[in-house]
Image 1: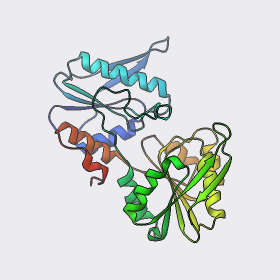
Image 2: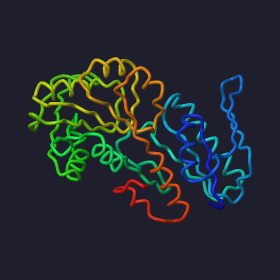
Image 3: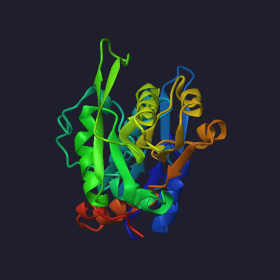
Length: 285
């Protein structure tokens, strides 16, 4: 691809490499270091003049450092006369605190969805998927589960939480019948995993035969790994928007869906001025 450069921030070099490999490109040369006062310094090691630049940086690990590094990289490319700079952010940081999506952008934003990859995983890895039920662990995710249930032509259920204090789950009420079915919990992210582990217990006690969890972003902080290990999941499936290798060593239930081809195809389509909406319903080959 002429006139395109892909650079990786330091948050997720493995995913950046997969994206570059998919596009048949080399990752651009970039050196990131810290001054002794902990300020981030980025040096772009090649010319980007007139190029269409993509910078891959996920909101994980040292989130604030990585966000700052991304801003400095964007700035460095702009100063060096790149014709266009696009940030590719697999897991968008600070999104939990602002529910008004896109509210603070005055530039074009394309939201990408893991749903097509999730549907593919379900069909390929859950033999009884035609008799499954898709479950949202809270009322807020109802739209997400109804969409997946429609596409699979199966039923859905949701768990209604009554909370007394933030981060403390109280009573859970299951709405829907999961008896003798494989239950698939679907959510956008899992952090400490309290909610989904409670939800799994609730589903088993309500008669589900097996429980899977499919979560777009696996943050897995604090007690998450021990909670998953002790819970009754067949598998906890996440995408690789956040690196999972270390977590998988301590938790054999975690499985990963690779979404590098979705990001690579989004980059290719954006570069060529094609529509990205095709990716909302298809997994690129």
